[in-house]
Length: 149
Ligand code: IDP
Ligand code: MG
Image 1 (cartoon, rainbow, N blue to C red):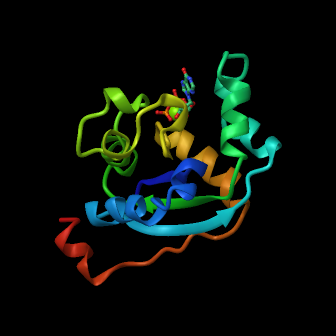
Image 2 (cartoon, rainbow, N blue to C red):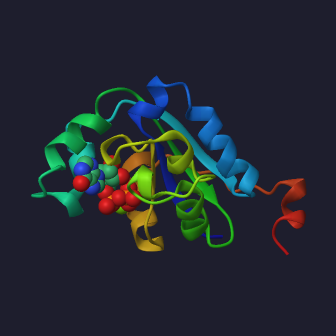
């Protein structure tokens, strides 16, 4: 089933919103397949955000994502990438609809609480970065049949 990589960013960790946010993805029906609490090193951050290298916000972004421990999670389900992005909201919280994670908890683009992969290819690349060969768990929940037809 399709997988996506979620990061609970340092602002969400510091503000005590980690499990509120994970809970929203869980309640959407997405199935948790991997979970790690980790301190991101600069090299890992630069690899993850390689597409943004050279942009004016890149240095600040790397400093932000390495400024406190984060949670990395893998969620899976039908259209997991798009479903998670929709629940997350737009990159800029003030352009995110109320009811989305960023729209409910954020105000600034540089403090937008959560990362979600933008494609299946990105998810594969990012899961490899944050799970470094650690197995994600293939399992089924008894309730899956009430979420996945
Ligand atoms: P996304 O997280 O919604 O996929 P991207 O465009 O991939 O957004 O940008 C990655 C992250 O970089 C954003 O989530 C945000 O934390 C940060 N970022 C993007 N644009 C800006 C900006 O203009 N100023 C500050 N930070 C930014
Ligand atoms: Mg992105």
